[in-house]
Image 1 (cartoon, one colour):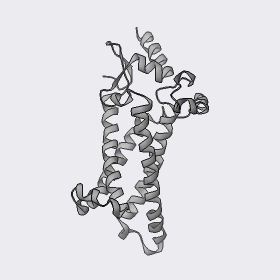
Image 2 (image 1 turned 45 degrees about the vertical axis):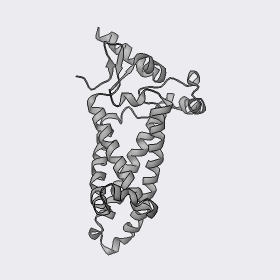
Image 3 (image 1 turned 90 degrees about the horizontal axis):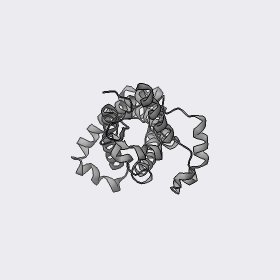
Image 4 (image 1 turned 90 degrees about the vertical axis):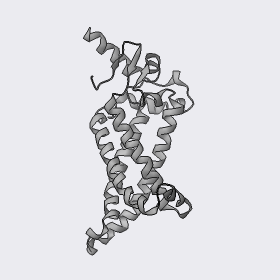
Length: 219
């Protein structure tokens, strides 16, 4: 089975292949664990989360390992999607109409490709913050390997790690909202993999038109 989106014979469109969905959930599940345990470490008021997740010792031991799993997931998403996440001239028109998108005035929003500019922003936000979280997390995880002369790296890591974590939390909230409320049916696509042709045409018209052209050329 092709890993590329294509038209299905049942009147639906394969939006995400099994591999894409698997990688997405690998990154998503690992991130949720990192989010919960990170919040438990960040504030005494949230320490009860660590207790629920098996205790502070287990949470502390597993947090960095789940961080590595998250990095693997983000890296795989980068390898699959980074070419499709590049900014295009049409994206500028979409951003100029962001108010219409927020107000669900779909008829006044420019046509979007497979990923709209908002999704691209989320992708790159997670990617770059993920790199900073990895670097700062390694320093916090293995401080004994940082010489005393480079102790400023420890201080920088203490600041950078929570700041980037808070940035990804904001992105995560936006991502969940966009996938459940802004584009009804999007959440189902990362579970089943497919969407209706009407959904594809409505939310990602440029992408859908390209799929139609590709299908016609193969016939």
